[in-house]
Image (cartoon, rainbow, N blue to C red; front, side, top):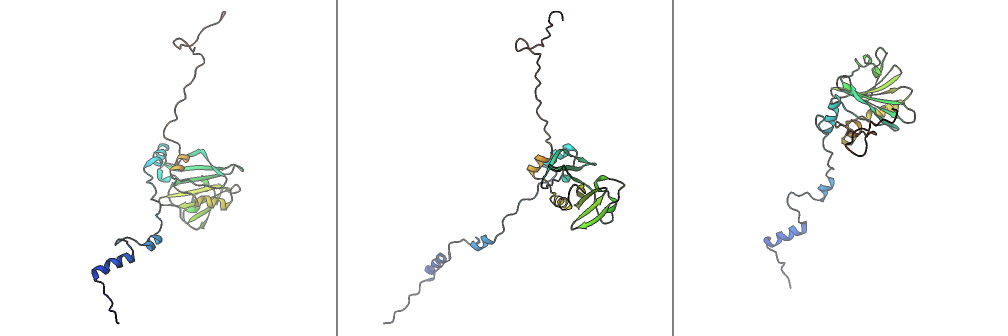
Length: 223
């Protein structure tokens, strides 16, 4: 006996197809889409003219956009070295705890090119001969017993310098390439707070612990 196949009506078949294909809503990304989506990038850097960095830098007389920080193995920031450079530039020094070698970071307005590089002294030592060598996007400069990496930025130059016989070139280069704008934690460690430290009350030893607290001016017999 020949059986005839039953054909389901379209209205009954459509929900079955939707169930078999999954219950995603139209426009929702499937598993493959979400797996291939890139991780969200970090938000943009804070505006250098606002926030804690701006208030601390401006209190020192430094332009906030000229504040940078760097790092190098074995070197720690000499807090007392942090200060203004020129009109509104920034400078700070890191010290090697074992050798006492100094690593100086200086940021100031201006530019540096193949034509002007030999004219700009290394480490603010005017009158000394300066040699310049292109190293990627930076300039490697030597003169007056010092060497320096200078990185041109938009409207300013970031310089990291040291004594030639105190810091190897590779360490100097790494410190220069590590120079960057400080985040909140680095700002707190780098720049002094604008809030004055609370005054410590002075204890006077001549005030008696009783009465109106007037100084004890008692003079011994014969005094």
